[in-house]
Image 1 (cartoon, rainbow, N blue to C red):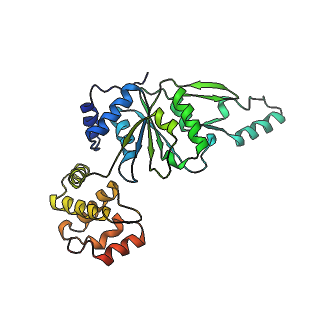
Image 2 (cartoon, one colour):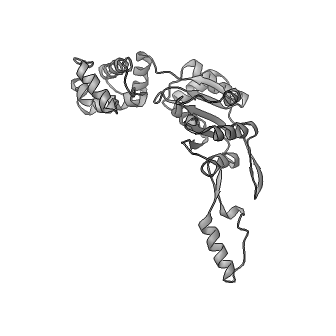
Image 3 (cartoon, helix red, strand yellow):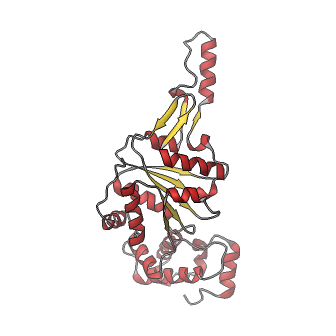
Length: 284
């Protein structure tokens, strides 16, 4: 059984808010159901909307151990589950050849545990497993994840099957760079995280930057909303909004030049040139 307990959706929202993450009712409900029904939660949305932060805030609120698997192209079992310490094995072989006591080369002492195996063997009262940017992995690894999430067990040929001490609460994230297979989606609860409204984002800025002047919060959020309405290569995420507000505070707040600080919010030269050429922030 998962050792993660929430009585209501409101408790989830309050717990996340206590960690500086403002979740709307739909997201709080999804997290509540993931914990109650003991099902993985798949969070999709554009880059920078706060998907990864859900897992971090949740683990912190619960006092749980957070284990993160960062997916990437070419990820396999050696990156995600376990590997063998070949250098130590070689030293053990040499020691045995020199007359020292021989050791089992594929025993526990030579096993290197990776995030998924660590999650299975975690003896913490609660564990949150974050499988980040699963859309970057290939089909073969996605198929393995489906089996892992179904059984919470892994077979290591040399050692046998390892089953979860306590199944972790699993959060998967995807930027939707490719479509995930229906089989994986069916195994999970699903929630799409969109960019927040201007008003909601201003509330987030106030929460993350206590004491920020109201004019600065509103000014930055209005500018970000304007940028997100454009066809840019990379739209600013919530993290960029918060950093932009911090930058303005460092530059005398209300008097700071938004256009001069565009590099805080936009990270592609063509985007910055486009915004400046069109005067999108003139007078802002």
